[in-house]
Image (spheres, rainbow, N blue to C red):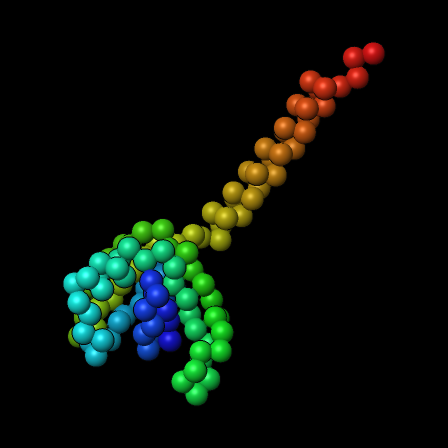
Amino acid sequence: MVRIAGMTFDTDIEINGETVEATIPNEYDLSDEQVETLKNAKKLERLDMNYGKEVGVLASYNLIDWRKVEKERYGMRFGWQTYRTTDVDQLKQDNEDLTQALLELAEIVGGDNG
């Protein structure tokens, strides 16, 4: 089960690099408004279920933008761009480097002038 933009569907997701995809089965008969809501979703959660009851969230994905909507035989396939781990790791490293540079600059500017 997945929850996308507050709507829950009996389906699963596929992750390809920075893309998360889900096929919403035809049985949900999505309206045009629901399709637009799904395209503009900001969060997708993969749910942990036990005998039809939600018991937790297995994974959560922040969605940046939609990449595709395709009509397939069994439903509509949605794809969204999400963050890549390498992007997040690079941002963390850049932040550490900037912090270190600021500390060194503060030491120079505010150092002991005797």
